[in-house]
Image (tube, rainbow, N blue to C red; front, top):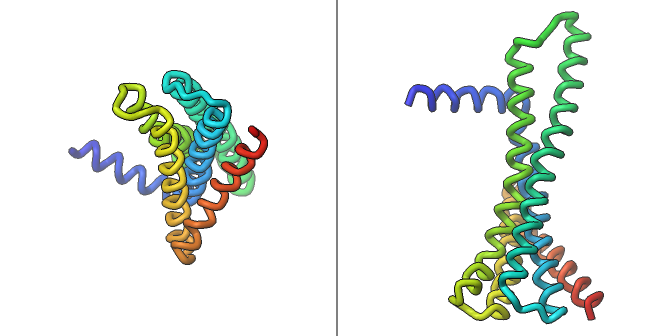
Length: 197
């Protein structure tokens, strides 16, 4: 229990030093949005093409979510680590001292890992949640076509919740904020539908 408390204190302290929570929130919403829209694109494309086979949709969806997750993990880590390293170097130059073993460097390393994990998990989890009805259809719990339609509705619901989350952060109207995200999803749906005909 002592180790967990110690880790919690470190996490809080490092977060305060780097202000990483704000970045993590932004990345969570952006990448969860990407995950949802990617699966929406796969579902609408499959629907238009007449591909009503759960195994194929799951394969494409799972592969895409893994790719998004890995892209987020490595891309975010390298980008954040480079930015943090630059800031530390600038601070070292202004202070004329080596900060290698300081709490600032430790917090910077922590923030790079933290951002990378959020960046990786957000699209993967959003995509997998969106695919739940398709997984159910794979086990013959419901028809594939119905599962695809439920997944699309589920994605719209997730987009609305992401918008509400942003609305709470910015203290905007929650319903309007949620509907803005839904509109983005519906525009994506319409474009794929029009281009697929």
